[in-house]
Length: 486
Image 1 (cartoon, rainbow, N blue to C red):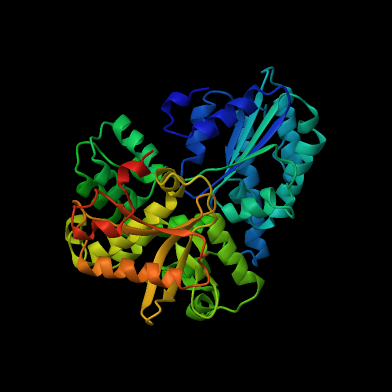
Image 2: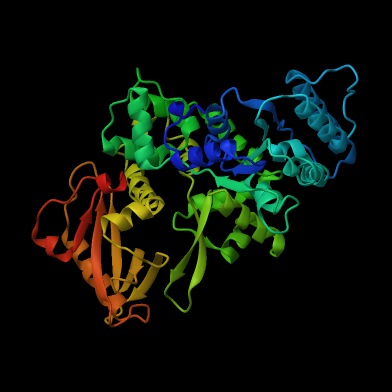
């Protein structure tokens, strides 16, 4: 094992190490957003340990064109066969496979020829390898594992995929063709702020936590983008390299979604609509906006985007009824849609300190906090809490209020109102802030969502801190960026 080159990922590395050391055959499924570092994790953790490794080719094809689908299948089979030869299968006596049954039999033959104690098989981008005729490869891979590899003690099979929805449908969920075959799954997430800080330090960057957070808000905790940053350039120049070579950024935006979904058009339409509505949209509003029929197909689109971590669904309470709202959460996409497609912005410097920048920064900081809920709860000493939610209501005097985040803490018998404020220096509480907080408390206390036996605590989450003022009395607790790095 070679974990020294991997930043963070302690739990994932421990899982891979345990499965490699196992005295039985193991089957690991690894999935996550494109560019999150799945292949790198496996390759570094199991350096020089592969008995066989192959990568599916990304080829865009119309699944209704039978001739092109068959051509796709044959191309993937040829690629798989080439990998078998590369890892030592003799070409003589082993003709190229005509189907996936033949391919799995050749893989068995290769593995039987090896004397290694542990035979590691890594199939990267399995969804691409399977293609439109997924059922054939899924079925044969399931047969390979269930009828042969599982009964041995020396096989470590790893499958990986960026098409999270495909992995969920065919490997993880109950109705999937490989369901119940895997012995372990890993959903690889973007880096946390703490992992980003460690990464930058290891690379030789000397960034303030404000700059680490701001960079996170621009590109997210995605290792692929972080790896493109150079130490001999400022963060402004590095951000320009990713976003303001606009043709390159446009291609990256397409690649992210084309690689995740076989029919990416509807997904991109949904993403664009959510990009226009920061706080999200209901399912019906999204349906109307993208001009698509409802039913199971659209539900699948939303489910797939949620599985990939691109969007989240949350409950918005208030008004005549509670409703489920879908919100875009991918930092790269949010920044791209907001600034890169706008001709007014030609560089990071043209973005910074503009009025839209402060609106974007304030909103995106809220997402950063939501992405670090465990750290926030720990900073507030909350031991047990229900799902945080947004809420809108009215004061007894009829003034409308919006609370972006309420954390119901069961053990503490308290509802935490969390206000997020992003600024370069200490935040200065204004008269309007005091009025807003007073109204929020009055409205929440007057609502049916707050138990009379519970207390209300107002928390201000800021980047740097708060300047002492007469309005400080309205705040029960202050959390700064430092706590989110824990």
